[in-house]
Length: 490
Image (cartoon, rainbow, N blue to C red; front, side):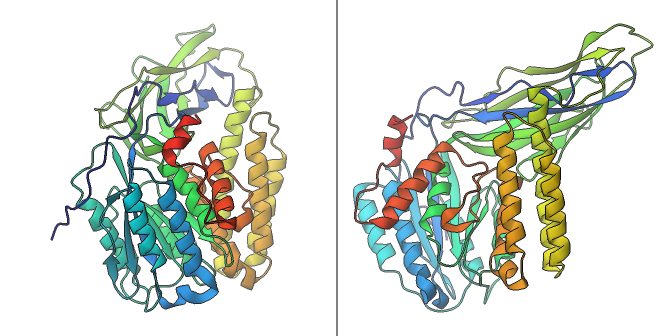
C-alpha cells in the first residue's frame, strides 16, 4: 500500500545555476610527451561552489535502532540528543521522517516539512523513544526506503537515509535491500556493531558513507557533519564526458582509473567515456585520473607541436531544471623530439602525484584490513609503515595538507592494530570508515570526538561540528544558526 502522505514543501532556495559546478584545467604528471609512442597521466577535477544560496531541498529519513542493547552506555540518549540537533538545524525547505526498528520496524512520522510546529512534534517523538527487542536492520531500511519511494513531491529534492545501529542482525538480512537511488549514510555505535554490514550498506548506495562512533563518543558530532553536507547539495546528476581524440588526434587509448565514488561507461562505437558522480555538496570536489596512450607520430612530425588528446565536458541538474551541459575543455600536451626526463616537476604535477598517492594509500588500508581480519596484525602494520615511508618521498607544496592527513591516518591505524582486542574494537571500524571516505571522496567520521583526520571535510561540516560540540555542552541553548541562516554567512 502506497503511503503518498509526504507534506508539500515550499520551493527550495532558488536562483541562477551558473557556476554551481565548475571544472578546472587538467593537470599532467609530466610537462611534455615524446613524438614516439608515449603515455600521459592526467587529472580532471570538478568543483562544487562553496555557496549554498542555491541548494536542493532535503528529504531525510532517520532509521533508528531501538533494540535492547541501545540502553547500554547511554547510546540511545546520545542518539536522541543527536536527533534533536538535526531537527533544530532543518528548515521548512527540508523534510524529515523518523523510522525505528528492533524486532520489526515502525514509521513514527511521515515526511514532515520542518516548520516550528513539526519540529516540536518530532522532538517529542524523539524524547519518548525507548529501547527493547532484537535488531532487524532490514525491516528498518525497507520501511525508510518506502517512505522515500512513495513521495508525491520530488522536484529539486534529494532522498537520503541516516541509518544508526549498535549491534548485529538478529533477524532479516539488510544486505538484500536494494537502495535504488537513495544515498544511505550509516553510523555504527561501539565495538559490538557489525561494522562490515554497516559499511556494505553504505557502499551499496549511491554516495553513502560509513562512519564509526566509538564507545563513549557523542553521536551528534559525526551526524552533524554529514547533515551539513546534505543541507548544502548544490547539484544532482553530476557527470563528466571524455571524448578521446583518436581518429583526428594523437590518442590510441584512454583508461580512467576506477573508483567507488563514480560509475563509468564507454560507448563502444564512439569511445566516449561517461562518468557519473551523483550529488555534490557545497565545497566538494571530485577528481578523475586517466592514462592516455599516444601514437607514434615520427612518420608525420619531426618538430614539437601542441597535440590534442581529448575533450572533457561536465553537466548537472539543479532546481529541477533539465541537464545543463557546460562549456567543453580540451586536454592537450606538447609533443617534442626532446621530451623532458623528469616527471612531477611542476606544482600541478606534484598535486597529481599527491592524488595518485592518496589512491594507493587507500588500497594499502584495504589490504592491511584484510590481513588484520585474518589475524596477521604484524603484516598489516608492516604494510602501513611501508606506505608511510612512501609518503615521506613525496615533495609537495599545495598538496602538503593532504599528505599530512594521510600520514595522520596511517599513524592512527598502526596504533589501532597494536593488539587483536584494540583492532576489533576500534581499528577495524576505523579502517572501514577510511575506505568509504577515500572511495567516495567524501568525509566519513572514524576517530571519535577528537577526529583529527579531516579528509574531504567541507567548511560547512567544520562549522556544524563546532555547533554540535556547543549543543552537547548545553542542549537547552538555541542552536547557533539554522540552515537558512547559514546561507546568509556565505
